[in-house]
Length: 343
Length: 153
Length: 121
Image 1 (cartoon, each protein chain N blue to C red):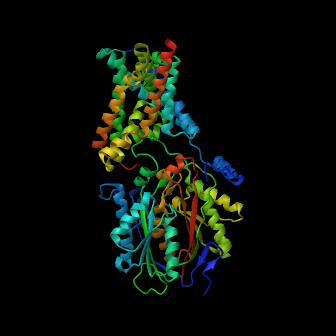
Image 2: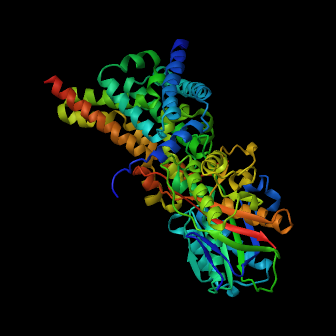
Image 3: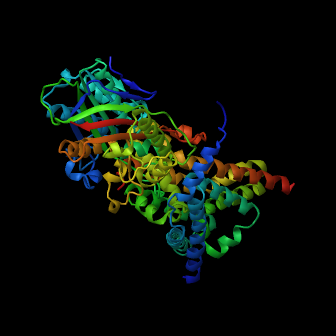
């Protein structure tokens, strides 16, 4: 059997699974941003006609998965496994959407790294022969996140300069086995491997500075990946992080330099791409939805069109809770990396 | 593992770098805005006081109560209309420190958690921020009162 | 109408807010902790007789900020203690501020029932 593991954290696939579709649903602020033209559906009203934002977020998750399936003329009944998660307690968004979709479901919590986590796990299960068609999805919603993690929406207060805005967005990818011959939105996109991240914590306690809290995990995973895969940054057209934001990206670059990794100009961050500076979003976008929609709407389409050939999609998550924060704990981070190639 | 973790040297160095490099809020301009907003809100309160004294002929206690009630009403209504948070973004502490800010901190969670019901949502969450203020404020007043009793004897 | 009253209300009220702003910008105190600090400070300053002169000078400039709420609490408690002893110490503060607290509860509830929060931009 060909080698499937490189070192402790990195996996490579014999028969790389394909990403055949990517669907996205976003809120109006995201729709008004630089990637506006790429999203499948932009919601004018972020309650999408539902009574609560939580119910709207579930609808977004469910509909993003359904749209991805429609692109390949597939029904939920043909999907073997649904992998996904969100930011809310008990991942209720994913749970309730999975109820509607009735697909065998493994819920995941990786905070904002969930999209990468689900793609990586889904690919491993396909390459291992445990599933043929896997739907991966992640969502976040500005209002539900504010309610749970921060302050009521009508409360007068100011954001700090390092604060990020939770993206209202749902992104879903459809993964299939290498021998798949059915309908597809993307014909050239393969997941060839990835690196499972470790939880890294350098003691940042400021919940308004998530970028700085997650940057160490991103640097740790990137270093492990390049070392175990025996590659350099130059072997990738892009190293894309999920939501480090502008300040987090700065710290990420520094930490990489400390480890002898020069990112030159190959680093991109979804949090920096999704909003325009004119939208006054301090340090950029965040949330599971940030990397999920940027990947599925923009990055995969550009890759399919041939703009680039190999990217490392590394979504980062801040694994904290308001309770832990009040008890004085710092914010641990994690980053999962997925190698996505065009063939 | 209990208690606070010991910071390693690596952690300390990283935190130091983060503190040095993080973008800072513009404190001076923010203080100017807080000054103006807070001052204006207090002037509105002063107008209410004058009205209470001269037109309604209330005694000192009545004027104090009237001012509190009117300012709370203003803060609550502006919060309900969705305007107070916009004022807050500009004014910072100028909108938090006056009693209108106290009203905002009560109304905003009450509105927010209405979706979880009027009893366990609205009525319970109303005091998430105001609760501590009342606990410590009333608590301190009782202590002061008791000390005043002791000193009077 | 004495315009000097308004001048002092503006200046003192604004200054107290600036203190709050400095705490917010330079330390990592959240609004909730700042409100608690200010109300307690108001009670303590009143106990030492330091807040009364500010109220005389600035009127609403001293009573509208949350330190003024502490002033009402402290003054009420001390007067209650003088009139009714220990019982008065307990009842004095809360009685003096009853109007504001009841208003907060009533208007808070009404606004919550009538209005719905909107997503911030």
